[in-house]
Image 1 (cartoon, rainbow, N blue to C red):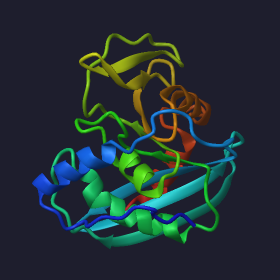
Image 2: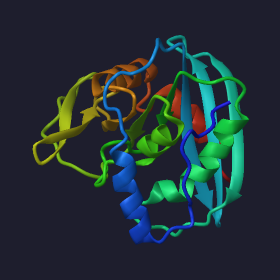
Image 3: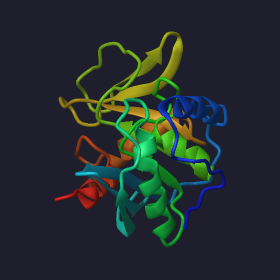
Amino acid sequence: MLKPVLTHRWDLSPAEAYALQRDLARRLILEDAHGPWRTVAGVDVSVKRGLARAAVVVLAYPSLEEIARALAERPVEFPYVPGLLSFREAPVVLEALARLEGVPDVLLFDGQGYAHPRRLGIASHIGVLLDHPSMGCAKSRLWGSHGALAPERGSQVPLVDGEEVIGAVVRTRAGVKPVYVSVGHRVSLQSAVELVLTCAAGFRLPEPIRRAHRAAGLS
């Protein structure tokens, strides 16, 4: 069971949420600070008609055999504001994580981590609250810029904001759109990219995220 070591109010104004993001970002650890990975949990959230469903699917690593999953649902209480999506989604994710039996070694989010205007996407936000290894793997770019990417699987280029590297653009399958990988907490960018590539077993998205996405779907 994963429970926060740090908590805060969720009923904030956008201005208060921006300030909190900047404060929490100062706590991030952007290098490897973890033991060996034997399990990886994919995390995704679906929102429909005011209801959010979070799914956490835990796979053995690197075999990718499923060993556990947990779901949670709750009403969405924070408005849609670009850059503040974790305030809509994190409460239900934390509820799902608390229902897990056991503790996965690393959390792999369908979303952003450090590649965020205030360096606190959902992977970083929840990683800091739990003080647990986490990373983001997003289908689209939220922030930053990058150069051209070769078409081969495994190709990667830095995602940058000015002179700072905030993530990596990674081709997980030849000839398909890349994914945007960034550190969440307690994981280096190199380790995050390696895990994403290992878990992308023939598909664009890593297997833990693919399974979590299906489990989180709301009909």
